[in-house]
Length: 232
Image (cartoon, helix red, strand yellow):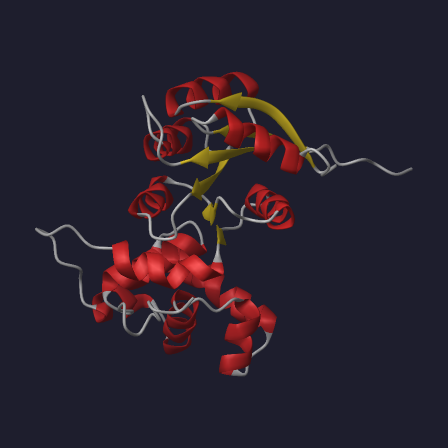
């Protein structure tokens, strides 16, 4: 007897009706996804999420009343099982990094292809982070900054609990390499990379890859120059 996996319940949030309609049309042919509601601002998104209990919220960042960052922070605090995928119109958008800090599981540009959007929703639903490769290094190296009155600790202080191998995996992760690229670069197995990353997340007290990359920049382990800030 075969069992059918229920579709991923998605809430679309954007202040422009045409954008919401477009996203809904993009997702409608995907049998793994079901759009259960739409919201036009962050406040409405939080209220609808509490009512509809979606699995994933596709969240615009810049909106009136309550922006996507504030809404993400509230959902992360009150509905931790609800995953947020942030969307941005601009490649360089500091609000997206703020959304990752607030608890978003990833971000994509609004010109993402239908296939990539569906794949990203499935990925964040599974608890993994999604970061568009073309945006990762440029965005984070440009906008991740520690508060002026609390300079970032030296990398040695942050990496004290990490093994040398874990530090190298963390560094390569922060430059934008996926697990396969890290394994190839270090000449280790894919499963070994995954084990290292799990350990790194625990020692750094971060939830996912996106937050680990932010931590690498804020710790000083990676800088805009070494992080490949000019890469496409």
